Image (tube, rainbow, N blue to C red; front, side):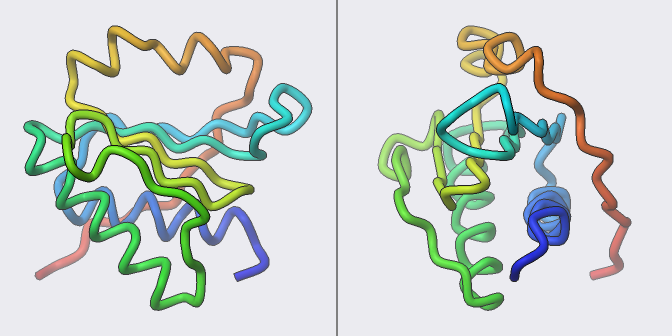
Length: 120
């Protein structure tokens, strides 16, 4: 998938479909040398965060995109999935507040994600 916005929307849709909450994508090109986009979202408990991470990894694999690095799947309170140009951070709510990644990348611009309700 060569369009990063399409990939962002696929990631956001997968998080939404798994009942993830507070989904935010930031365009950090020009702000960060690590990545171009950051996706931040929350799960309710550690198992939920792990389930969301597993779903994102599987969805992206079906699109031919494998993560370069994954951290936190064992603990599940904070999972980072690195796709080089897109970095996904999945938190339990308390940890998201504690680390305030939105503040770290506050100079980034919010990406308007296209997520729709799906019937299962």
